[in-house]
Image (cartoon, rainbow, N blue to C red; front, side, top):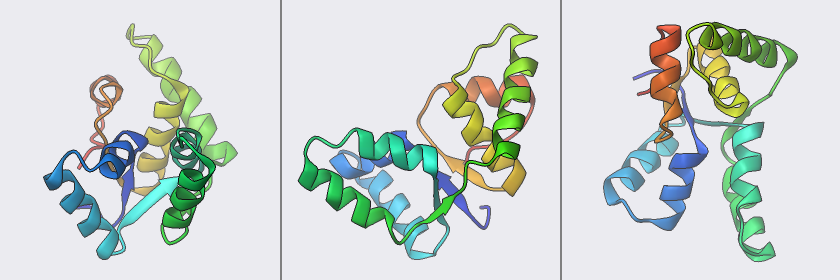
Length: 131
C-alpha cells in the first residue's frame, strides 16, 4: 500500500452514511495510520453535499485533521493533458476525476474510490491509481 492514500468523495459519502462496515474499517485504518489525504476539490464536493449547516460544520471539523493537497496549476495542467490523451482514445472523463488522478500520479499517492470513471482513466492512461 502506498505511504499516502487520497480518499475520494465517493468513499467519504459511503463512509459517513455508514452503510458498509468493511469500508468504514478500511477508512478508519487509513486515518489511524496517518495515510489519509483529501484534495481541495474532494473537500469541496463533500462539504457541498451537506444537508444542513450543522452537518456542514461537523464535516468541516472532521476534515481538519486530514492532510489536504493543493489544487495547483501543475495538477490542472496534467489533468488537461490526461483529458487530451483520453480523448484521442475516445474516452471522456470529468475534469474533477482527472485532477484527482493527476494528484495521485504527481505525488505517488494511492487512490481509494468507488467512482467508475477511474477504471476508464487507469486503462486509458495505462496507470494504476487505486489501492
